[in-house]
Length: 455
Image (cartoon, rainbow, N blue to C red; front, side, top):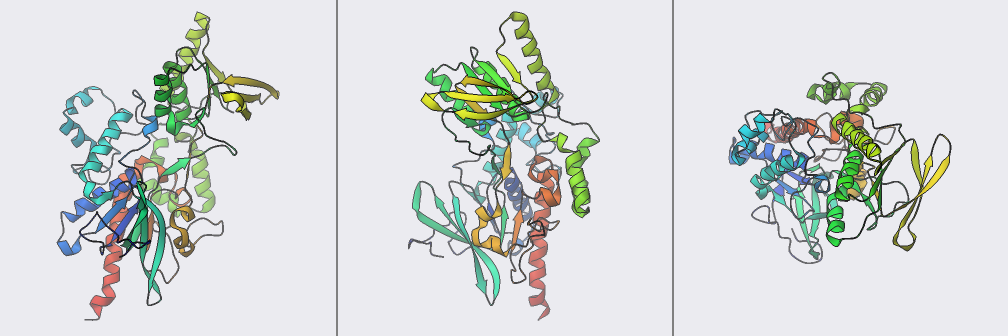
């Protein structure tokens, strides 16, 4: 297929530009990585004719997952058993345990007596896995458009146009029978926020701090907005990275809320919970989501809460308090004049306001899913929506589409309204990849049946 702009398309994922993919994944974080593994494992067990022709497009130059928050001593908040494969197939050699064995650390990890590896270690596991399916993914590949392709009045394929940011004038078009969208979350910022060298989101924390430390620029005060895990981690990291600075944590709560990781509450992350959530009435879905927000949203690990509290008390004893908690408070205004920040903080019970003269403002304000219109353009008009304008999504993660569309769009993420709290989390990644793979196989068989029955 010729690329737009007159140049021939070069599809480096497979042997030629005429390849039609059974599934083309947009985004290559943990979710689509898990799908790539599931597809590769399936393809090794079937004939050439039965194999799933898959490819994945990722705009980053290499695999990376929340690199800006890979703090050296931060641990995962989910068990290592909820890796890319174990919940789907405990015998897979893509498991975290197989990774440890290959790295020569299996016994050492077991001796730590923990279910929660270091975040940097789990990221290395993800990179190790991604390297093993590298032939299925194209990096530095930014998708710029998705167009429906019609034949005989039916939308049979999608043409996905992408470009390499290093050569933006050259476009590549790939054709697919199905898409799997897993572009992850984007930083959420308060309205009107302007990012700069003094104002960041936590997604940039580590590289920004490294730049400041290497430049030697003094940091006298840093302000962190937010009350979740990322906020608390940013507060702790800034506190030790800048030993002469005052670190102020601003949040509307009275104090950090501990994450509920108790055994019964954690059942909301079970695969079976997705079935129950999906089939439940709308009001029950909302109740379940509200009841169990404390397992994931705006909560902090108890160990970190206690460590920060201990630090504050030690500083009071020593008479030099660098760590301040501005609770029941909100940021009302940020003045960026003259290369410094004037941050107006309101204490909500009294309305009293204080202006903090600061060098840094770090927004630990979470993430939000990208709208499907931003990712799919015209194709999004083919997707069905309910009375609340939310996408209609099947249990197998397929978006419901117009009757004349005979190809499918799968979503990994952005389905909290249908599949529950684990839609964007690692907990069900392996199981979800298996469900999508099974659906791809079933849909392919269903489309072949009419042709087969004609003979």
